[in-house]
Image 1 (tube, rainbow, N blue to C red):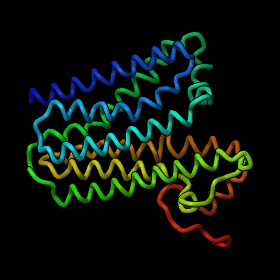
Image 2 (image 1 turned 60 degrees about the horizontal axis):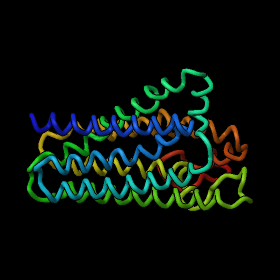
Image 3 (image 1 turned 180 degrees about the vertical axis):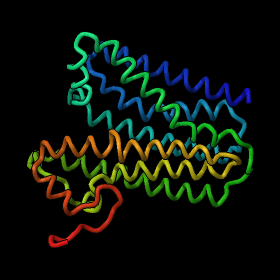
Image 4 (image 1 turned 45 degrees about the vertical axis):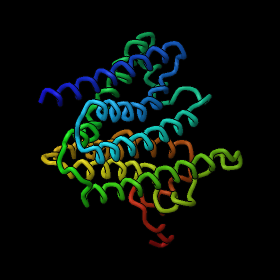
Length: 264
């Protein structure tokens, strides 16, 4: 119990410190979008702090830390490249405008500290998966989790690449990407994220009494489907791209499936 508390406490303090440093940078640059880059890096930080502090089964520890690092670094690199020189995200810009001169302190709590708390709670599945010494082997649940994670990582990586390539072509300005993975889902990158976290959960589920860590993928699922994922993204795109409404008629929002016919 003492070790568990220490791991949880050290990880929370590390995340809080990282976010406060990010907040300080945001004050200098007047751009809080840096928090997007810190999101993936925060999970990598938690994974390796936990790895260094625990004596769980090494095979599972390497699996969880390795997969988290691969996902987190790719996501942070992608978001950094996407946001570089693009100015502040409109979400944060609206909050800055609404808060006025108080935004410097509002952003500390509403953006950075809030995200550190969310990050810590979601990362519980990464932390507890590395704590247990049992089973001292990789099980079929670990392998199933690895498979689900791999499919999710492929979906997220490929769809992000396809979207970045589409946006880099000036002739596509104002158009809607409806090719590649985007022909089967309006948000294949979110679907990939969904699978990644359920995959990590399945790996952790192979350890005793870890069923409750389902809270991590459930939070991710809720965020993607009901909060800042699909609802916010679709509202923004629909306002800017009239063709998106027609795209909605033919393409599933989340789970990939074949496009619907005109008379469907």
